[in-house]
Length: 215
Image (tube, rainbow, N blue to C red; front, side):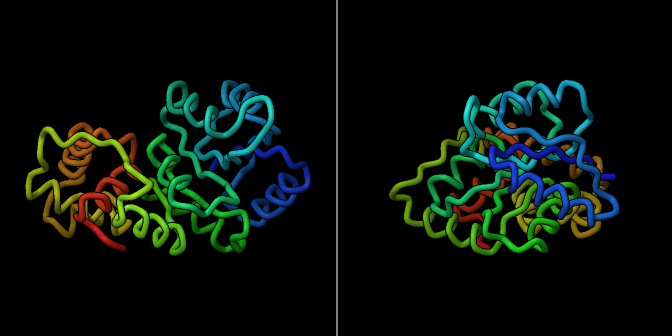
């Protein structure tokens, strides 16, 4: 069962999402909220796997809510819902620790794919979001993600990172590289420490900015 919470200040949008998600038999909406403050209160009393988070909300917006979730609920994954499709907004949310980014104009099937991908592999980028990110990051004009480069990645770590970027699960990476799942997790944690990325989505941004991976 995938346990979800929704945060969006538009009641009709929230209700539509709740109805959509009810059609997914293995998904349970634990609660919905109108702003980040209500969301954080709800997270204190509910076990949640994934939050669908709007960026523009009163009282506490999605940016601040994401920061607080990363500090107070580190195991909760976050999919940002937004009308903004520019690289600055997308990369900024990845840097802050979002696990996925979905445009509000997306089809229902894409929302379901995003939820399942984040649950299984830790992140989701649609084709549009990936393309926007790559274009902006390759130009390196307006977006300058901040990562660590003090300790370079080993060849094995680069192999693991490329596999992560291909949305492979830990088990799949282990099979491909002839490693144990525990060793894959060890390498992934090392990569996170070396790069300073906040999560798997951040690793993808790092790989794209360094020319290690291109979708």
